[in-house]
Amino acid sequence: MHKSIGRKVRKAKIPNRVPIDVRPKSVESRRYYGHWEGDSLISRKSPVALNSLTERKSRLLLLTKLKRKGAEETKDAVIRRLYALPAPMRRTLTLDNGTENAQHEEITSEIGLKCYFAHPYASWQRGTNEHINGLVRWYLPKGTDFSKISEEQIAQIESLINNRPRKCLGFKTPLEVASSCVAVRD
Image (cartoon, rainbow, N blue to C red; front, top):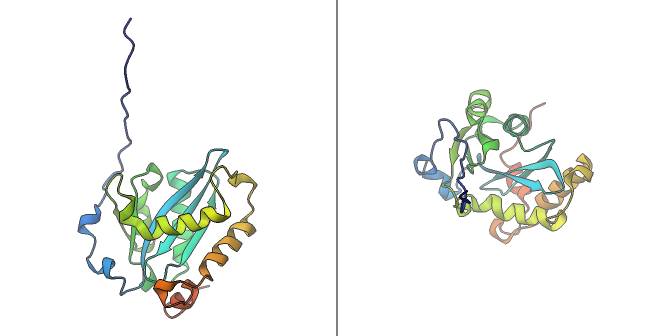
């Protein structure tokens, strides 16, 4: 009987992924609003997860609690949070290669947001979002059971981060910078 050394890892493929290489170059400049980066934060204590969306120019954070880190839950959260914004605030979304992002085509068809995927193991390609996730972890350190965190607490953390002045924004807050573009629909 042979013992296997190592293991085969079979990653689920995300259909019709569009690589970050074909994303418009204007996204890098941060001159225009509406270019987002997305990620998931998970807890080892429960299946409950968080979806974080960060707008690149303003650094505005949208943080949403999910029952689990699934493709359906992630798609619904992204659509719900970004649909309320005007169309100029919904241009692109850069994601990682997690299977929770498999329904990116539905996001594009529903709200017109074009999705791009960073290269595997290149989290720096979504550096704005990774930095903001670090700020979220100040409030919810690794090991926190997200199932015990209320929606109100999530909203408060989002508000605290969005009202925090940033040197890169000329010491304005993300809300101040984003308010010049955002008029939320009912």
